[in-house]
Length: 509
Image (cartoon, rainbow, N blue to C red; front, top):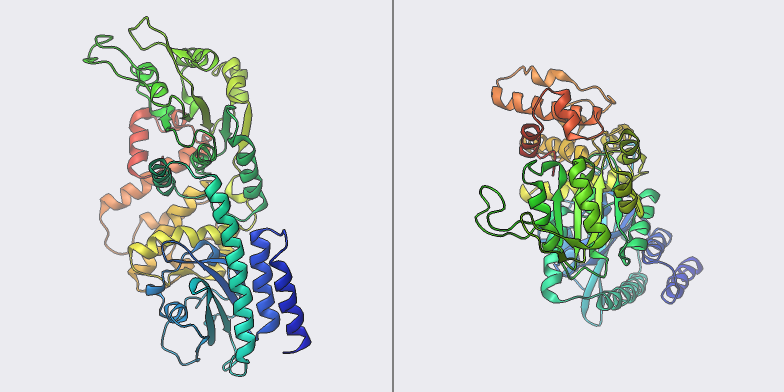
């Protein structure tokens, strides 16, 4: 081995005992690949408990790869690599699809892989991951010495093992009761993950970690579609109350006549239709967390009663004289600027200060540097699995166009737009999502292309009308800071009817 190779391997060995972060150690390993092997791109995978290969570091590939998970059965080359204890080479004329075709960083229109090599990573007979290398040049890996591959594979596996052991110890320290952990995991999978590599998301995660272990009230603010509910779930999951329930309340959807009963409960006969006693959301959340979504929509009368419960920890069911004590942590979210609402007299100042003990601002997507490619990779995973299209990806030039858009609807708008484009691509038998697959041009900022509602080919009128209604509701929400009541007024509609229509279209998830 050359001195350069020796130097790289020595640095990797020293990293095993360093205090660098997991991400830094992963990236150091993948950077070493470029110094030792003649490749244009490389990817380091870890094998998770569900037998998925999850990328943890890449070089020469789109960052969207980091948002994906690869099931080996759906990717024959990856399956061949992990089933072999020796390095596996794939020649340029190999007919097996390469999982990274279209994902190489290149200015060329042809961005397919020409040569590929990979090796599985084992520690004491246990498969822990894999490492792949891709090259544009044919025959790039023909003359590599086996001892170089074996040495590098051993160091890479040792790195993954060390990181895995550290993670396992941390997970063991934070482990809760098995049944509760299952429920928490189900809630997380239902509401998605907080995906992103930007400094803004890193700061958001730090803020969550800082406040999570306390019992302070948290006020989460941000535009519609930024992921405020994900933040709330993350606060609860990292809190000391994570083994207790987190109860969700959509304040905007509370029935006006039954809002007090929904929050505080009622006794039998308290009002017409109260045929039995019922516990409210506060009682259900006792010992845990109550998440008040769209808290700015609460009427003033209810705000006063909410303040009393937060201050004194006691409540009264509707129709009852008995006081009940509750121990609830409050996490609230709003897309309104509550300071202005206080000034306007539509939100109580004392309640605002009670909720605003630790404010968390969720950044809009347009200010998150470099997160769109990663989000695109993550958001497309559901489409890939549902439609058995494991190689579906976005063309790099389209990703660049997407990064230039303001995305006023934030992650939610990105998800809906990308999903529609993916379905159009699948319908046409394509594996690469191009700009032609989108409903509107990616070069436009805030102007919708209405020609989509005047089709050249036959389409059901109902579909066209519903598509227009969907975009019209999103437009009204954008103009009114995501406030449903104001959007309903803008469209001359009843708020409840508008909210139900939005729910039908998946706008208010």
